[in-house]
Image (cartoon, rainbow, N blue to C red; front, side, top):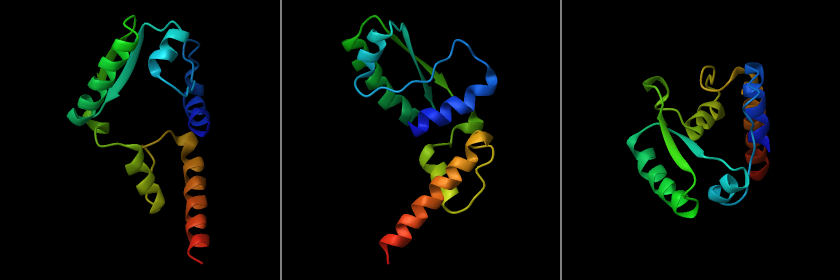
Length: 124
């Protein structure tokens, strides 16, 4: 729910009437059938991403042969970026500007604050 909310706020200013942010618990192949999707679009940062995503694409195609997977490579500018690296930068009070949409920086800082408080409470 938290990530869905952040995604919705991140694209809000784009005014895209043909984009929907949703979440689903289960198989992606089942989700694509429910929504009559014809394609799954996946972003890739590196060759290591491709290996995993290629296996997932083959499995999804086996489960629902009516859907194709399309891979899009990121620009070199963002190839190093991952959620875990952003979380680590935020945890150690580094600047995450330019790494995440500006409208969710406050949410990320608040989440880090809560994690640090929980760690401090656990060590007492």
